[in-house]
Image (tube, rainbow, N blue to C red; front, top):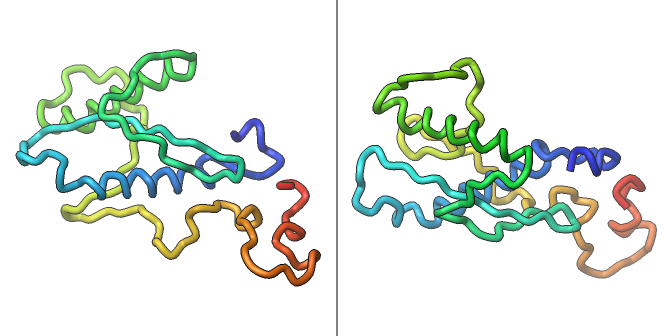
Amino acid sequence: MDQHHKDLGITIEDHLMPRMRDITIDTFLSVRHKMNPNKRKDVFELFGFDFLLDEDFRIWLIECNTNPYLGTPCKYMESMLPQMMTDMFKIVLDPTYGPRNVPDADRPNGFNLLYRESEPQINVRRPFNFDLCYPFPELKPFIGKKSNVKDSPIAKIPNKIK
């Protein structure tokens, strides 16, 4: 995205990841009372979220997997997957069992805490009154009576987005 749409000024971290975080939080909150129903201590699960990006740069959740594919079909995944698993184990196992070997202890963790109900509470979800569907107001469809072509939202779209 950053490579193919530089002219639009769209970045994954600034324009797409916030919506993906919102959807991830909403997904977990929708089933939080069904997760770990026996209230077992020191359990964890890795989830895989599949998102779709449409022509208006809107993010859609396709599915959430409780058994995500952990293969390495490309060079990016070959480097990302081992780091992700190492980071996950540092978060969930090291506090309980203590690390035996930490080969890359200085590398920052790639995870971000998005939500926590216990103290101190954390919730990075944006407000619900924020227009979340269209990351670019210029691409939001115009609904209603068009009074003048030059005043329509389509006419106001910068040339770099058209």
